[in-house]
Image (cartoon, rainbow, N blue to C red; front, side, top):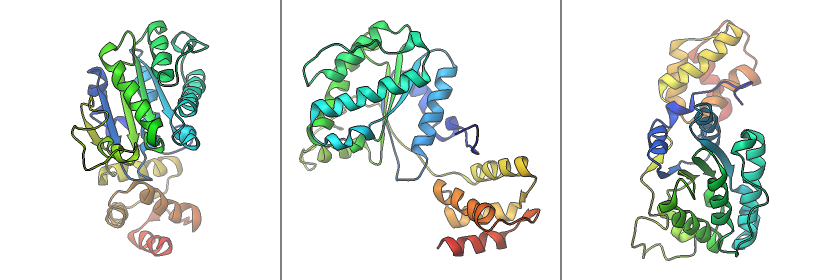
Length: 271
């Protein structure tokens, strides 16, 4: 949360995203766990909305996971998340109309998005996080409906869609119950323009993150300590934060300078 946490700007972690959104791209972001996908997408959605050009909404598909392959329940869970997130993050003129239109079980999502696109004065940009928590028929239905709306954007479908998960969408075919050895096309979501892997922090990112602690408290991470932290973590975001927290939060080092030796001891404790 930007008001209480030290942050790396989202635009720097996904530099390709603004251009892909402007192009009306449907694209994929993937990375292993604990690399900051959710944090980055939520921050990016806020940044996009500040521009005033799009109605951008971050939505987690996690709520639909218990529905498994139940197509209807999975879509209702996603639509419920859209309504909740829109109420919290979008001004009233940009929110989806309620109630969503009646539709068959295979068209619930696309019908709702069409109604929203027709009513919204700005093009809609949707970030679907944890898309790979959907499985089987539910996953196939969601991807198919997004695919079918693609040619109708922006008047009757979202202008740009980002799918985020642990895997590239190419691997979703297996999760959707298809034979991964008979893939045939780029993916069941073959309208995607690009797959972007969210990388680790650079050494510069680590320095910028730790410098925020210095600005906040006056306690300084020596340059050599920052280099040592990057060496031990390779910039993996969870480890970068855990290592600093071990120094500052757990062992409560109060010395004015954080040295490589402090980092080494914190690393050993984490191991």
